[in-house]
Length: 372
Ligand SMILES: NC(=O)c1ccc[n+]([C@@H]2O[C@H](COP(=O)([O-])OP(=O)(O)OC[C@H]3O[C@@H](n4cnc5c(N)ncnc54)[C@H](O)[C@@H]3O)[C@@H](O)[C@H]2O)c1
Image (cartoon, rainbow, N blue to C red; front, top):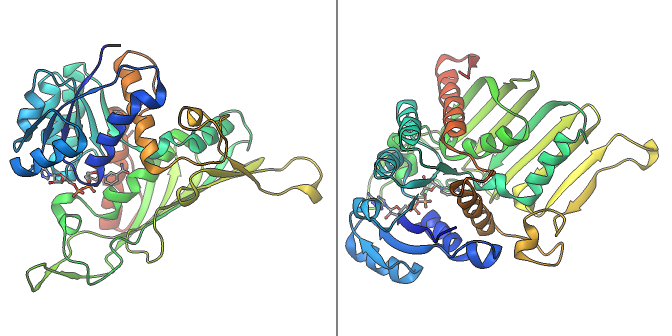
């Protein structure tokens, strides 16, 4: 495959993560041409220049359109706040570029639909940053479910918690603005929804209660501003196959740092995983002498692809940024026309539909069907 030219828009938490992945993907996997880091776009020229130097990009612009329109760019990484995703992704697709856009896909259903239409019209690959599905432990869980290791799945319980919004004294930021979406639902719940979509399938209906732990947050230059988003959401759902489930998300949960705790219960066993212990999973199988039954802890290693691309020794552990390297490799596979394990805009739209149905349920105080 020819070397891909990379454009990057945004260089915060996720922008750095994408840049690291583009830098690492060729040496890690050893089977692809090293991408060329061509053009970086930021909110202003000074920041763009400084970050291009730091992250290894050849050109820098204070206008993101320059990165999108650069003829040497083949793929655009979009890592800006949520409200910019639709405009930037559609512009990149119209310019004939492949897109790797951070989650959530968009802040409105109409924007997500427009993004999918732009992707279809362009014929280019349009993928979303749903890195947690790339974890070798999660991929192994998927294989175990497909092989029937826990029988028929009948119940799923997921909790996602972090504490970056837990401090009531933390200043008002873009995540508290309605322009960024509903709050924990699109910022947070979309990650477990991406995991559910690959592990157990589509959510068919939901009932939801959202909450704001703090009504106001202080402004950096004095005073305060009313919080417009919900940091907590409690969701009950039904999967398309009839299984029941719950998804509880809280981005103001003191002490929780990166918890995505999943329990999947089947007719013959159970599977447990928690992103805070991302290098292991637990399997219970109702087999053999009852006196010897119990959960087994499986540490990921070289038998859980693509772990071996990073480390030749089992049990040493991958990290969060490694998931993005795997996602970059999958994206390159997809661009080369090979089968790939990715959440593209089509599935992304389904996740968005679940989120909007959840918000609607909170509003009407009752069960809402998720359009298929
Ligand atoms: N996949 C994941 O695990 C994960 C984790 C965190 C965040 N995210 C997503 O990544 C996105 C970015 O989040 P973040 O935490 O990196 O935010 P951030 O605030 O750290 O970074 C955002 C960057 O975008 C830049 N930016 C803003 N407006 C711009 C514009 N008009 N043109 C060019 N650059 C602009 C900012 O200067 C900043 O560098 C969000 O959509 C978020 O939901 C995904």
